[in-house]
Image (cartoon, rainbow, N blue to C red; front, side, top):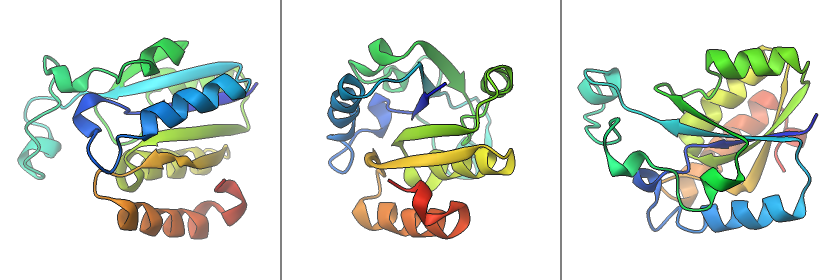
Length: 162
């Protein structure tokens, strides 16, 4: 089974540095055959460490910024809400185990947070994370993306960065 995990492509994470990512993901999906596409939505819980330690007040359940960017939700077979960096929620873990997946393709936002955390979590579960680097971005810009790709290359293997 070929699984694409689209991480947190939401209005609140779109800026000058990431505005092209949704369109690029949509084009990519039209040209590649995935058996399953899962999209995640980050929801910032009240009194979470995101709020208390990072002063991140947006992206709460009722915020319109948590909506997936137009076109992304329509690509997904499943949309999962999460309140963590990693996309490996209990539901996703069950799905991976049930289908005995050995690799997962990853696209989305943000490289230095959710994408890196998810890649490490997959790797720790003996599931190969394959980062589709042209379909990933960071609200902090290209230098943050490149730094994260360097870290990932060192920790999950350079051949797993496409």
